[in-house]
Amino acid sequence: MSAIAIYRQLTVLPAKRPVLPSDVRILPGLRVQRSCNPKAPGPGQEKTIISRVFPMTKSQRVANSPVVIFAAAACTRLAASIYILTKSYSPQRLFIGNEPSHIAAALVSGSGFASPYAHTPIMLTAQQPPLYPLFLAGIFKVFGIYTAHSAWTIVAFHILAGSFTAVVIYRLGRLYFGQTAAMLGGWLWVFPWMFQVRTLIVSLTNSYFAALGFGVLLIWLLKAPRENRGWFAIGVYAGLLLLLQTSFLPVLLVYAICLARSKARSAQMWFAVAGLFIVLAPWILRNYVVLHRFVPIRDNFGLELWLGNRPEMHGTLDYSRDFPGNDPARYIRLGETQFMDTKLTEALEYIMNYPKGFLVRCLHRVVEFWYVPYSLPFILFPSLAWVGAALVWKKHLSWLFITPLAMYPFVYYVTHMFADYRYPIEPVIMLLAAHAIVDLSSRAFNRCFASRAPIPSPFSDADGEVNS
Image 1 (cartoon, rainbow, N blue to C red):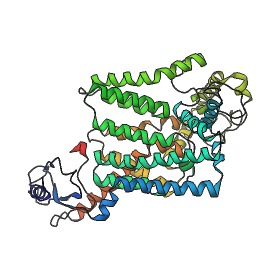
Image 2 (image 1 turned 180 degrees about the vertical axis):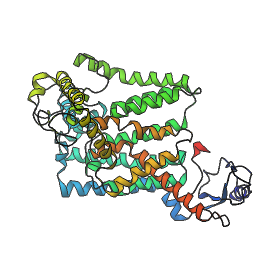
Image 3 (image 1 turned 30 degrees about the vertical axis):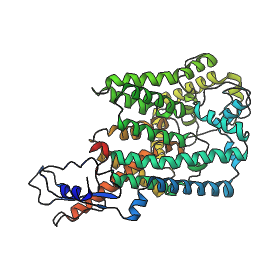
Image 4 (image 1 turned 135 degrees about the vertical axis):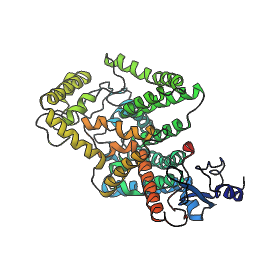
């Protein structure tokens, strides 16, 4: 269908909202805008019409290019990493107190998946999920344990993951929110507004891969494969995501419930569940064999709860006393599983005896999760994301985007948090914030020109592909 034919079809004012031809979005260089129709028949009638279809300008094509978005994201992250690792501290400092790298060093040394804390004897562990330490072990095997070359290589992979995440955000936005929100979300991810927090750039954490992996999962779920093997593959992928970042567990549970309630997907959900358990089973079996107990993925929840909830602590997180990274004597004496059980008991006793103090700390951590370090971007974008969540509340499949905001942070509300703990769901935050900006701007523009002839809003575009 030619651009002229599309324009003629879309400029006819229908009684109901027009259905866009399926090939509009794949025509290169075309942009669709809506405007308010003040001559709509009456209340309840659709007042939004497609006003025009016209070629994108050169700058718009550049801004919507996934290649450009990827390159820009790579450049900003590379520049920030070089500055931090040359001006602030040496690359080897990244390994200090970093449990995944300690486990990776033990793996390369032939000691197995062990010793997450420094200055402790070889002790098999389930303190971390396995995928990220295995990734670090591969780097150490090639470039050496705790070397500057290894640190730079790991950071380079993180930069690539962050850059691909920008493209995933753009694609995910096009699928669900429309072209303008997709472009804005991608560029919000590119701009270095978050780089003042150094741990968001150069930390040795699984968050970079988790953010990328979760974005890919959302795209996959939006496309909803029809065949059972496709859902089995989704289950396998979700299992790998949990072995990378366990905090996604409550999010995936809610996803499973929502899909199971769908008559069209309830049967296929069992294939996804089968794939999930096939991936998790070897790790669960390994933990049972070496730790002599059932440990689904990690065994350190008791310690994390104790770090944020105990008597005589300061603030919402306190590493003093016998935290193994500072004083490993008790950890060595009791062994990992008994030590974690002891910490869980101590934390639960505090919570039961001081429920008010626990509640106050939880409320503080809610604020910290969404707004630390209290700079303008860290306050603005999460706030806009919640506005965006409210705007899409009744849309088809909106639970895919609302669930991460509601469920992912819960474990950090009750334990403790750092600024980079939010990073795995930042792609969702950026997209919802971008949608809120585009939607509210479009509403304001249309309200200003409601009494005039239809003028296309520069902020509006067609719905995402799955909402067409």
